Length: 203
Ligand SMILES: C[S@@+](CC[C@H](N)C(=O)[O-])C[C@H]1O[C@@H](n2cnc3c(N)ncnc32)[C@H](O)[C@@H]1O
Image (cartoon, rainbow, N blue to C red; front, side):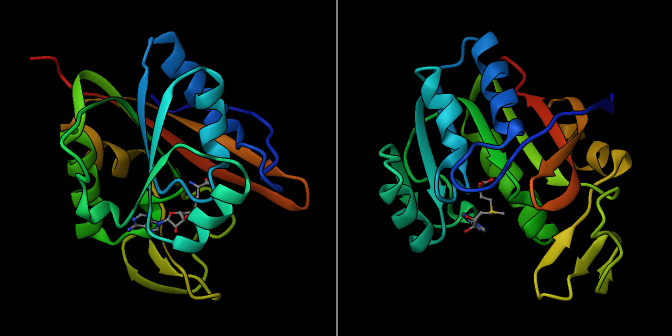
């Protein structure tokens, strides 16, 4: 567990992140077809899944982000609401992928979000989360609330994962593996994120 993957990405404009390309390829290898993306934002990370002919549904709290997704011709179904109010329909998915959302939530919300995702997975289905890592340059900046939970100087609260915290948080949810990825943006220093993979136990 905890292998290092060095990839390059550009998050500028509507380009998908390298993480979303990796997850879409992984879901394709597993032959997953029906995918939920909680916190879909303006939709850039839906594109690699759509290119694999997967059916993509999103959840997004920001109507502005949904409007931008529509302007960018991202036309898949998007539920407007919070991941804390899942499920939005009586349906199970083959795969769930959530990029850079879980670390924005507090402790109770993170647990609720993971529970909600696990409950919407088919038996044998996969869920993948990307989250900011303790190795990122933002770690330790701003005001500390609890272990690894900080309010950044620009006002956003972030929870920083490490291997121990991943095992604690995802151990009961079919944790398979996690990988370190350096996200490299054209105009910013690299940000170290963790890609966390889980599989729902088949019954
Ligand atoms: C850091 S952005 C990442 C967006 C997108 N996943 C990407 O990587 O391009 C986090 C996204 O999650 C959304 N979000 C934050 N809290 C949420 C919640 N409780 N329920 C649904 N979406 C939420 C934000 O509006 C934002 O679009």
